[in-house]
Amino acid sequence: MTYGFQSINDNSVVQIDSEAPRLCMLTKGTYSGTGTASGVFARPITSQDPPMVFIRPDQTAQIQVPYAVWFTGGPGNWTGFSMSASVVYNVLSGLYFVASWASMGTSQFGMRLWDPAATLIYDSGAPAVVVTYASGSWTYLGSEQLSNAKRYKWGINKMLGAGEYVSLNPFTMNCHTSGSGGGCSLGVDYAAGRIMMYSVSFEAWTDQGHRPFLCAKLLA
Image (tube, rainbow, N blue to C red; front, side, top):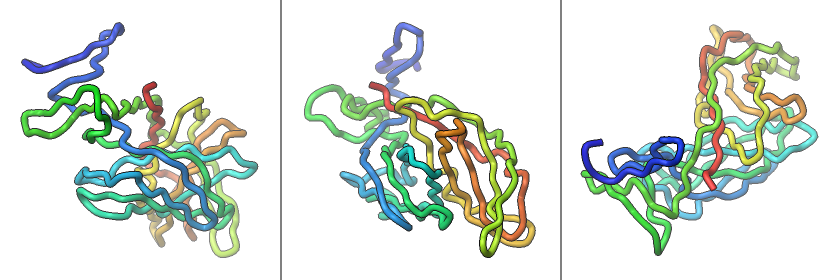
């Protein structure tokens, strides 16, 4: 940067920059439900694009598999999100937080920074989100027969660490085979120490390409 404010930590990493936004946690909460589960934001998110939703599913005997994620509200006024549960195991529960590359005023005291366009890019009451892991290298693990179709499975060998959450946004899009489409869904296999991706379809697409997967945690 040529002028403005910048904060650099002991490891020479830029933590705050008045010319560049950081990924900020804007609200957080819990979700639970059978068949569907929703999170209602404590306050509307004012970003133009849908915010990033990170979840940490509760550790249960079976793998929770959310799919068909959608947001409520609209640009400048996102009010919540909902997701459907896999019919294989239709219970969803856990923690979530919502983040954006633009901050929102949350504190009565502290420090705020605006960019040259008068956009708030830093608020000391909005904790930083730190990306802890990113990958697009999925390994095809085979399929299992359901009543009307098959569920195709991929995995990444990644143990979800303490305080880590996974991003839902890359899994809000359907995946398609040469003959039909199928929903794409995400699961955390705590017992096997891996992240799972699924699609339910009549035909397999064994190469999912590089659908991104992100883990993040909140900076204390």
